[in-house]
Amino acid sequence: MRIGIPGKTCGDCTMCCQILDIPELNKPPGPFCPHCSAKGGCAIYATRPKVCRDYECDWLRERDLGPMLKPSRTGVILMEEADTERFLAVCHPDRPMDWLKNKQVFEHLKLLARQGREVIAKSGSKAWRIFESGRWAPTE
Ligand code: SF4
Ligand code: SF4
Image (tube, rainbow, N blue to C red; front, side, top):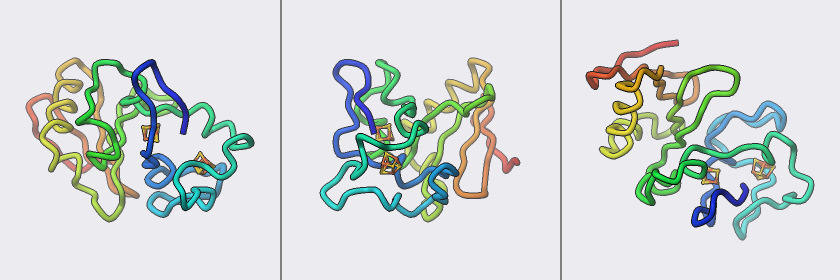
């Protein structure tokens, strides 16, 4: 976790420490990272790996994404995929369709698709592409 742009902070959100696959920590998608503190936050904050220090989800980075899109509220991490042009909506493996169930998230994904982005919802090993019309289909 880290402090984002003024007015936005991770606060009590720990979604990226739970949902994301973090190979550097040998952490699969779903379970909390073993360094998550029971009181909240990261127990090794000062020495956390670079991948954690560098990470910011889109909600944290983008001023115009409002409080209703915070990952801890939606269950969905909105983020850029490293080293590709794809935009991701990542969900917990136990709640794979949260990206579709949350109307604001889905509208945001359709908007990005209309702007020409390749938009992918991911949950564990499953993935779906969202098209500008709102149609969606399984993908790699
Ligand atoms: S998912 Fe975003 S808001 Fe939540 S802890 Fe991670 S970077 Fe912060
Ligand atoms: S090391 Fe800390 S910041 Fe990184 S995933 Fe684990 S709990 Fe989160």
